[in-house]
Amino acid sequence: MKIQSLRGMPDFFPDDLKKWHILEEKLSQAFDAFNIQEIRTPLLESTELFNRSVGNSSDIVNKELYSFLDRNEESISLRPEGSASVIRAIIQKKQEHEKHKLWYQGPMFRYERPQKGRFRQFHQAGVEYLGYEEGLSEYEVIALVLKINEQLGISNYTLKINHLGDERAKENFCKALKLFFEPHLASLDEKDVSRLNGNPLRVLDSKEDSTQRLLKNAPNFEDFISDKSKSLVRDIAQHYSDKCHIKIDPTLVRGLDYYTGLVFEVVSEELGAQDAFLGGGRYDHLSKELGGKNIHAIGFAIGLERIIELMKIKECNSKLKVALIIVDEQDHQKTYKIAHDLRQVNMEITLDAFLSNASLKSQLRRANNSHCNFAIIIGSQERDSDQFIWKDLSENGYQKTLGLKELVTLYKNL
Ligand code: HAM
Image 1 (cartoon, helix red, strand yellow):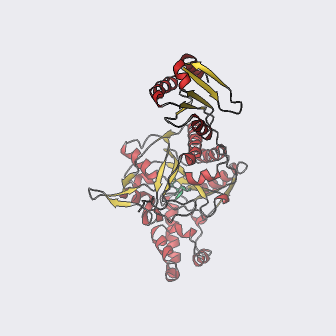
Image 2 (cartoon, rainbow, N blue to C red):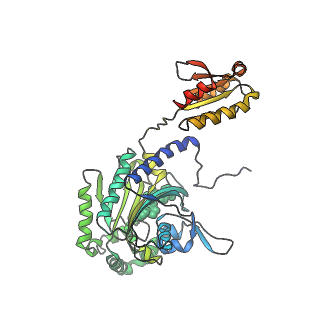
Image 3 (cartoon, rainbow, N blue to C red):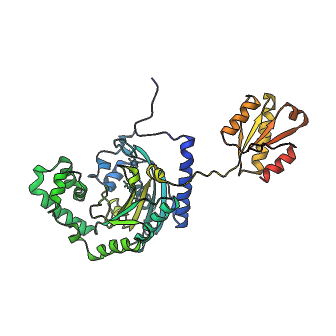
């Protein structure tokens, strides 16, 4: 029986990766433009880290964590997201008092039901601003989100924003919500009961009609939130209203427990059911939950599999590609020497040494199929005279015969 990959964990082949490389380059340019530095954290962390950050009541921890005991009987998990690890790393390095602008990128793991746009291994690029109080950093982070979309040619999207209040507002509202639902517990869906017990805010985005009907008479989150918080969301919405389609959405609560303050998501109808390709918000209390000092924190993560679907950038591989074709097996030693010399003088060019014994005709066909611009050919005649054929593979088909020195000079100046 042939072994298959695990469900929801796709392979990426060279043709798929061309677009990924463009995406990664554009993202890194955007991060650079905002002076954000890269951080890398491990794929495996202690399960406790995610219990205490993403939250016991979240679907991510409850149902989707890839957790297992290692050889030392310790519970470890594949990371489902990046923010918790970044905060853990900063606490561990005792850098809680410094300001940081960090980005990361890599695979995340969630045991979800695979479907279009939803995978069990997926990739995120995330940004975390640490040490920045509520205010200017909200604007800066949203500006970065818009810049990234612009860089990638994405214009058909909605930026949804909401404010979850400060810790006290969130706590008071959750208490009021629990009290309101108490007489209705028997009629509530099991999932909503567990949300109510874990993070009552998540009841607001319940998919159950009966819960949504009850919510119409429930306490209003807005009544618990300070005027300062409300005006921040309104001001952000107004500030960016001429740059993108921005909407205040009071039901936006996000699926991770650590948020307070501004939360946001970017959605596009072009993606179908899994329409969110970016999500984030403020999470000032996470560091304390993890045993660290207080760290003001705001950030977001982009779902790369989703954003790549929306990217309207043409693939442009402007690098020249040269095929090195040797017709006779006895010239292979020579190939290594020439390839070495050429790569030494110009690393900007892709030199594809074919390492083949196939006929000249079939190697030229291969060069055309793999979009080479030029070919260097050594046949028996050239071997005897220590020369090479330089062939232009574009329509003009121009070719000339050269000595090694001339070839190296030509290659250097391409
Ligand atoms: P999140 O909303 O859970 O936030 O994930 C961010 C993005 O990752 C989503 O908007 C979505 O595009 C993508 N994503 C999530 N799950 C999947 C999946 N199973 N398959 C494909 N794509 C997926 C976070 O992870 C937070 N850590 C973001 C953050 C950073 N907040 C503050 N800083």
